Length: 282
Length: 282
Image (cartoon, rainbow over all chains, first blue to last red; front, side):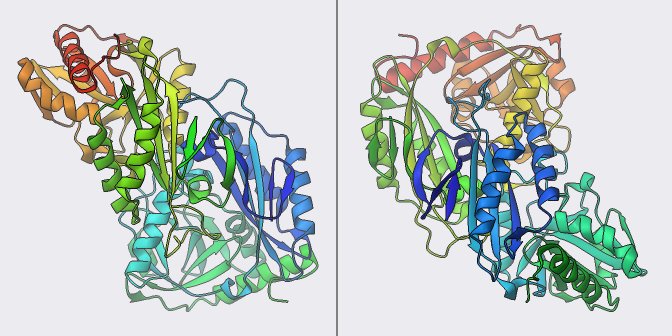
C-alpha cells in the first residue's frame, strides 16, 4: 500500500513523473517510522527532523499535508505492527541541478509489515572502506542518497558480517549502515556527536534522554576504533530494530559486560507500550 | 519524450514502481550526453564509464539493451542538437538497504533540447561549504546522489556566483557542481586526479588527450586554491557546456593569459563536427 501526494494505491506501480528530482538527483529526504496499535512511535521527533532537513534543502511541505497521509496510513497498519516510510522530494524539475524556483514537492508514504524478529537481533560489524562525509550537511540528514551505505552494507555482508561500521573522514566512528552506534565505557553510555557525520537518530535521542533515569550517565563523545575495542558494550539503535547488541567488530568479539543493553532495550520497549498502547513484541 | 525500459512515452508521467531503489536510495547511475546530427558524442566513452560504475554497484545491464534505447532516442533528436540523459537503477526492492539478489534494473532515457548559448559561457565560482567525499568510491562515479552538488550550486548562486567550486576533504580542488576543472600553470594544462574525489569526465579525458596535439603539456595533478589563484587560466569542462572559462573565484578575477581556453574549445568543437557531421554551434 502506498500514498502518492495523498492518493492511495494498492500496489507500488503508479503514474509518476520521471523528471522528479528525488529520482534524478536524490533531491529529497525520508523517514522510517514504526507503528504499533495504529500509533506512529515518536511521530513528532520524526516530523521535526524532517522539517529541519527541508529547511537545509530550501523547500517546504506543510506539516498538515504530511500528517494527514501518515494518519491514514497508520490506521491501515496491521495489529502486529507496521513500518511507514515517508519520502519527500523537491518534485519534478527541468534538466540540470538548479532547483525550480517554485517547487511542487512530492510526498510518498508506504507501509510494510513490522518484523519483530529484528528487534534486539545481535550485529556483527565490519569496518567499511567507504567513509561517511562529515564535511557535508547531508551526513546529518536522512537524504535519499543512501548508496554509500548500500555499498558499505554489501561489502560487510560479503565478509560474513551482518552490518557495516562506517568511519568518517577523520577516522572517527560514525554509524552502522542504517543505525546509530553507542559504546559503554567506564559505565557511561557514549555516542558520537552529529558533527562526526552522524544522523541524529530518533531512538539515539531517546537513549541519551532515558539513560540517566536508568542509572547510566550518557553523553555525546567522539569515538575511534580503539574506544570500541575497549568498551564494556557496543550497541546500535534505529527506529525499527530499536536496539541491537554488537557482538563482533572485524572478527573480534565484543563481550557485553555492562548490563546496559538489556536495561536500555527494556526501557525502550516499555516506553513504546506506554505511547502506543501495545509493544513491538506483544 | 522519455523511454522507460524500452517503452516510449510522450510525457514524463508514466507508470513507475515507487519501490524503485533509484528513487528510494539513490541506488543507480546516470550519464548526460550531447547529440548532434542524430549522433551521440563520445557514446563509447559514456557507456564504458557507466559499465565500470555498474561493476562497482554490483549489478549488470546488457549494453545492447541500453544502446537500442539510446539509438532510438538519438534518432528523434532535433537538428539543432539534443541532450540525452540515461539513468540506470538497480530496480525495485523490498524495504531496507540490502540489494535484491536478482535485481531487475530500470533503464530511463530522456531527451531535452541542446542549448548552444551554454557552450563556452564564462563561469564565476564560489567555494562551497560542503566537501566532496574523496573517501567514497561514489565521488568517482556519476551516481544518482547529487544533492551535495545541488546544495553547493544553490549556495553559490546565492552569493551571485554562477557555479560552485567543490574542495575535497583534504582541502584540495575537486570540481564544479557538474563539471571538471582545469588550471593552466607554466603553460601546462593540469586537472586533479580521480583520487581527489573527481568524476573522470568524458570531455576531461578528451582535453588531456587533445592538449599535446595543440602544443600544450597536460597532466593530472592535485590542485589547491593557491594553485588556482596563480593560474594563467582556469576552465571547466562537461559534456553539454563543453568548456567554460572561469573568470572569478570567490570574487577574485581570473585573467586568461594562456591562450589555451580558445584553442582547446576550438579543438573540441572541431572534433564534434568530425564525429557527428555537424557541430554544436553550426
